[in-house]
Length: 143
Image 1 (cartoon, rainbow, N blue to C red):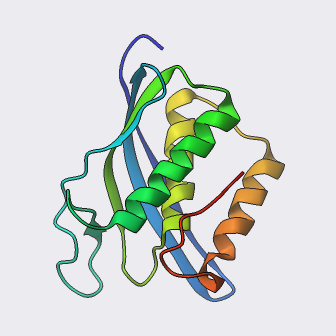
Image 2 (cartoon, rainbow, N blue to C red):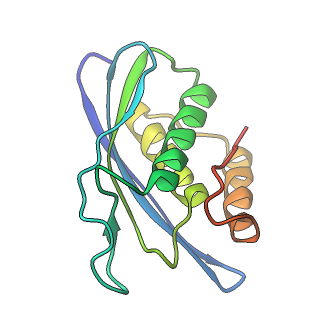
């Protein structure tokens, strides 16, 4: 990778009647494996509106995004890039850190042009679909 790449990942599904939504934007460039968060959204503005994580707060969503990026880089065998998470979008009713992590993993794999095996993606989805049975702010472990 010689230039900076911007990428987006979106997870939007309904499973067992439960909504799962998150969208994550990242920037990837050559580096040494650093992951940083530089969000600047407004946060909650009104019920039913998309929320963009602000610079301060939404720490559970940010931790989920970092976990997803870390997992995706490891699974792709890429520790030679730096990733900056620039935007995390969700809904307070439909988004949790695990869903954000899956969207961040997708954004990372998109940026790296890496396609996970269908069985691996199915495993990630099963973790996401079980996420509403765990504490709402639990940071995911995809490993």
